[in-house]
Amino acid sequence: MSLSKVDMLLHHHPRAVMLTGLAAVGVPWLLNNYRQFRALGQTRLKGPLGWFVALMLTAFGRETVSTAEYDKAATQERWLETPVERRGTRPVTGWHCVPHRQTNRLPSDEMAKRLDAIFEKHAAANPTLVQTIVSPHEKNVLAMVIHSDVPSPHKDAVQGLREIGHIHRIDHSMHIILSPADSKTAIDLGWAERHPLSGVNPFFPFPNNYLPSNYLLVYAPRDKAELDVVERILVASIGYMTGSRSVA
Image 1 (cartoon, helix red, strand yellow):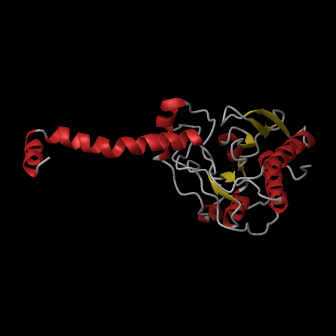
Image 2 (cartoon, one colour; image 1 turned 120 degrees about the vertical axis):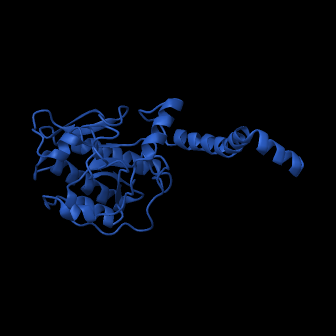
């Protein structure tokens, strides 16, 4: 098309030309973004509508690895003995904040099975402290929650819907809640990151049902040494969320 014809189109149909240009750029990006969303695995947000909701929520997410806010917490109690620093760089997480998943450095099938067994072991070993139900957050995986006979010991437990943690089947990362001091340790040493929506303004998007700022993604373990640390993090989460110092 000659420059004179382009000029004529811009002059007579500027809106149509602009919209066509935006569509040419935007549609491929949106299609690719939808494929990325689908690749993150099963989630409570399903199909194109779920993707659109995830797209909107991601606009309100925040960075996930700063820890200065935990120094200001009212309590500095610890349940986690300081682990070694996690080797290597952090795994990459998906562009979307919901679902919040890692996309590389995934564990072997054997390591994934061992993590499942550890999760089940601690659920069974603490029957007066915890129980397992469908995750109040994910809606499609089993979660460890505070036992119905145990009162919520703090605001984090209430905001976190009394859920201690769950394992994501696609990558075997975990979402858990740690004490503020333990959250700082786990993030600073490379074992975890915050959920992008944790601590976000309570009035949007979920009034009275927002994630506490210490709602963390714990990266999937790649070997026995990392599995041992992840197990200690899980035990610390059980202790903090139930207010117990006697977790088996």
